[in-house]
Amino acid sequence: MVKFLDLKKQYLSIKGEINNAINSVIEDTAFVGGKYVKLFEEAFAEYVGVNHCIGVANGTDALEIAIESLRLPKGSEIIVPANSFIATSEAVTRAGHKVRFCDNNEYYTLDIEDLRKQISKDTSAIIAVHLYGQPCMMDEILSIAAEYKLKVIEDAAQAHGAKYKNKRVGTFGDVACFSFYPGKNLGAYGDGGAIVTYNDEIAFRCRMISNHGSKEKYLHEFEGRNSRLDAIQASILFAKLPHLEKWNHIRNEAAYYYNTTLSNITGIETPKIMNDVFHVFHLFVLRLQNRDNLAKYLKENDIDTGIHYPISLPKLNAYSYINQETHYMNAVKWDSLLLSLPMGDHLTNADCDEVVDSIKRYFEK
Ligand SMILES: Cc1ncc(COP(=O)(O)O)c(C=O)c1O
Image (cartoon, rainbow, N blue to C red):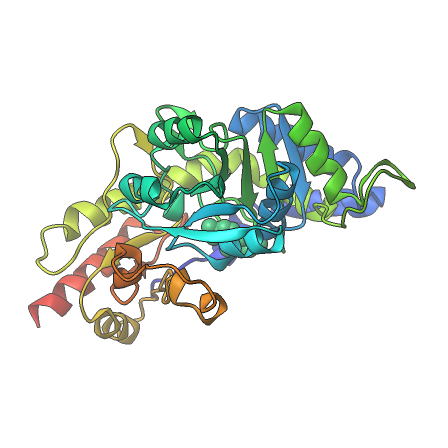
């Protein structure tokens, strides 16, 4: 049996630390805000390499608040990749802007050529999603953003700890967003998210927006919202953070093994890894014809798989109102080919062998 992800196994490996973390918050009755949230925010900012981290309720809120903090022209267009989780584009609309889709390239990140094509006089920002754990081509994106005076928001929900040219993702854009949904590389035991930035003003605004537009209790400068990182989640994340590097390396090694053993099977496209990046493999995604048949075969052999994502964003009913030519996009054509293999720090060498052997047997049938 190979699980897609095994959060129970991870919990058991750090049970004492997690239970202590939760107990401390309860003992101190420091449930909202306070020292546990501050401790995690400071540790995560240092880990990423920025000077501000604002804990929020989830990754979707992080994106929405980050966009709002940039004070972009109302109704302006924000470019998002056509293959991502809906939160990326949803946040754009919810923050009062228009979604403009851009194709994903062979690395599943923003396609630079298509990105240039999607820019218009109405464009105000680009959301660079480090999809599946691989950093976007940040040099190219930042130079296009400088050329057209666009803001860059990093969606690093799937890429905690990933590096581009030896710098962690989250340090490149004007602002960056993380999700701590339980299944993420750094996951809470419920919802959680964070916004990180170097920029003092953006950090200040994000903090205010996420806390009812107030810096001090009952002194509301404007109408914000309630989107704060829960203290129990913060203390769990603080306990888990020192383990993240080790867990990311396990993912990276499992991915390397899958890649080297599966890449010579005709009919499978294994993930391509850019030079000079540390890919943290939140997901290991294959592309193949008739992927449902392989998924079914693996299920019969007790191996879980997933699909990320089965319907590309432009094809979702939620976006039927958008009038944009997207049929030519790889992201739109590939959604029926994608298949995610088990990936996480739970994987042993024997698990990886089992997955690879089963896939080989399927292709030899
Ligand atoms: C790329 C991407 N962006 C944003 C989000 C939203 O995060 P959350 O689920 O914490 O709201 C996710 C999480 O699923 C994601 O994968």
